[in-house]
Amino acid sequence: MNCPSFTTLQETDDWLAIYKPTGMSMHTEHDQPGAVVLASQYFNRPLWPVHRLDKVTSGILLLAKNSECASRFGELFSNQQIRKFYLAQCSSKPSKKQGWIKGDMEKTRNGSWKLLRSCSNPAITRFMSSYDEASGKRLFLLAPKTGKTHQIRVALKSLGSPIDGDGRYKGAAADRTYLHAYGMAFTDGDQDWQILCPPQSESSDPTEAASNGRLWCPLPAEWLSPWDIFGRR
Image (cartoon, rainbow, N blue to C red; front, top):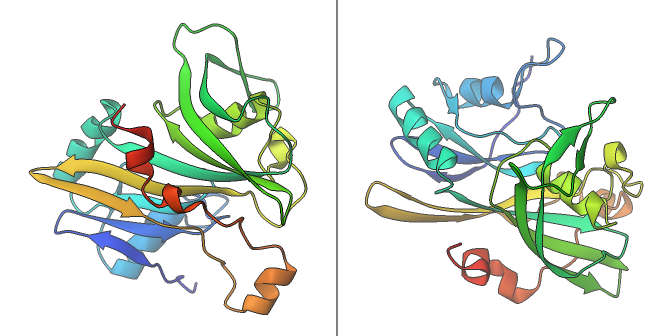
């Protein structure tokens, strides 16, 4: 088995942040090793996952280098002290351009989820959007306050703007699901960290990338500091 290479975005003695490509599962699936196993092989050391990304999602994946760090980051995630920012690209006009999406989530028969009007234990996502006239696409910047399964995908579906390439939630046909883990901000020990990972083509050939639609809308300049846009809470 050929182990894929991983781009390191940030690294300390206790953890590292890497780029996970779309289509890679977190864990072993149908005898195919997932991101955690592959990254452990690539970096030649045991690694612990401290959060998860859907198989279809690309972008920042944080991994601990020891069990103590994994426990520490587990608490940070549980206490919502790690701020996460995502990008999504859609073809349909949303029912609103910015604001909050809140509601309980309920699993449906086919393994998908839907957003309810009730708020007993809601999924909470803050977002804003931008329209790109050249492509006719809409780009969303999202800051989930909770970490429910398929939360962002269901949230955008509820706005009438399912993510391009997300067949499960009726997104427009595309070469991939256009959902990307774009940024993280957190404090570890006495140091503040801000990690940013703009979308990138996953093809080494720019011509092939363009012909396959592997290009995202241009990011508004102010989105380069998502932690400043949304504030602390």
